[in-house]
Length: 416
Image (cartoon, rainbow, N blue to C red; front, side, top):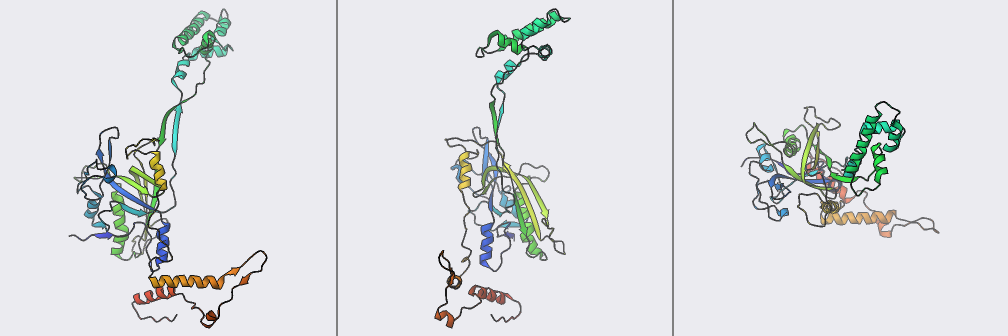
């Protein structure tokens, strides 16, 4: 089998160090996003098509669709096989069919839901008076066609033609006005003179077009090492670019890229989603490069949105591809898993006990009793603590020092 450079870490996570608790704090603090690449598959009904998984070769039906849609991704178009063609692979179980990334919490999404209202059909029925008839009535200071006719009669040249025009406008309004609009001759006369009726607007359409952005920062712990640069910079860029660029079968023609399900627990869950833009900032905002001009930091900004432009509220079950209020609320109820206590992660049982003992001893030595009626009192150390004072160097620091000494290329003697 060919040798692949493995992506065996979460893309976007800062480099780990020897202090396990620090690594846990970083993992807990970083928001996580899972991207499920897929291909469109035609379905019966008004949905037209939906996403089927295309992360890797797999047989069977899409689990989330209830087994009704068969997988149609071939070895040439699934994400993992394409990544292998460039010499990279993701080191994760076959059951995991997504690419997991950690992104910067600098621009959290803002959702906007819009409603558009406009004039109803009755407004058009009442706006039939010609602009000329309305202008003449206004110049005459008349509020109705009858008043304008009386003013015009015998006072203006071509008065007969103007009278005929106003009468024609009145007759037209009488013919087109629905019977539900009452008002009789007076209303018709006023409308013929250019008056308006303000009907309430009616709903036209609604919109929901989320446009999200996430910044994935790639860290290169050793820019001077070509293999490290390939693993931590080149490999994740290849994986992220394959998510959003078109696919070509023959190297000449090209067609649509993958469509995705993009999930960030507790923040958003878009399915199907598309990637509209990928921006690669080499060197990051601080332009961090080595003297060999290898990148120390690379920022990858991905813009993505939903293929649907509306969100529905319905008491009935709707196709999984349709954004609904129920799914939107469920995405907010979701949460990030794998959060651990930073004080004990990666520690042996003995180290955990020592850590807890240090915490208890520190609390006793530094506790202060404070009440309303009492001055602060410092708890005196016990006779045993006076005879055997605690070591100033914690057991955790001694363990870290031992690890550093064991990894040192030269003999170092440190007396703690």
